[in-house]
Length: 318
Image 1 (cartoon, one colour):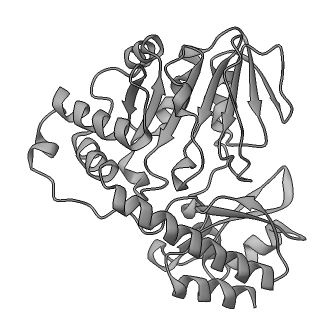
Image 2 (cartoon, one colour):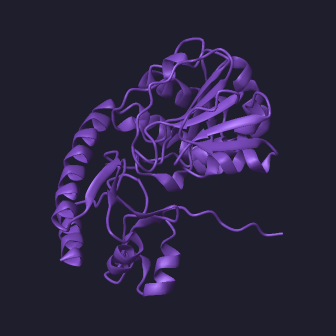
């Protein structure tokens, strides 16, 4: 049986099939991926020809520990993308009842439902749930959460978009009831590399590594990730650039009558009269966006890379 695909950004193939053109001619704003990615370093041939060794994993773990100020007693689990770790989270679950704070990224609830758990998707806390999942900052509205361990729930915090500069919850991760997930592809703009991290207690790390198996990330991903996470100057400069571009994008959308709902400096969420109609209007100009079936007046846009992208959006909206 083939399960129906869940809605996600990045489905540019669907846009092309409906509105023509080719990938190079489209401005894909349907994701929250940095449009100006980290510059790829030169890689030794061994990254491609050899199996990743322990040293490569250790070097990336060390860079990640320094970048995110990971507590000494917490472990870092490296995987081939945050999606792989989201799918593995049921291996850590406490109890049968799961609370997912909504509206949010739909893969969290899907992973636990596929594993047979009783999943409650709601905005307010579900006090009898033994495991809670929160996205911080939230996708798609950018909501921030002030969380703390409560002793009777496993808390899983997806911080895929937190590297833009919001406060992290990583300082709780040495505890057995707290897990933080990190994505590499969003902030560093290299989603195709497939690299993600779980920061958690030693026992939870052991369960995840057993679930993921050996060589959970590729040699090139380990080398590029180590270089990027060690480059704090690039990170600081990028945060400033993203903040500036998101402000420019807000001005363009507000001029067309859109209302700002929220977002991060990697994506913006707007309220409009008819989001699907606006998505179609933009798509006819080969600009792809993200709409939401449950919120027909919401449209989400990622950032263009430069002023020419902003001008293209403004012309399409004019």
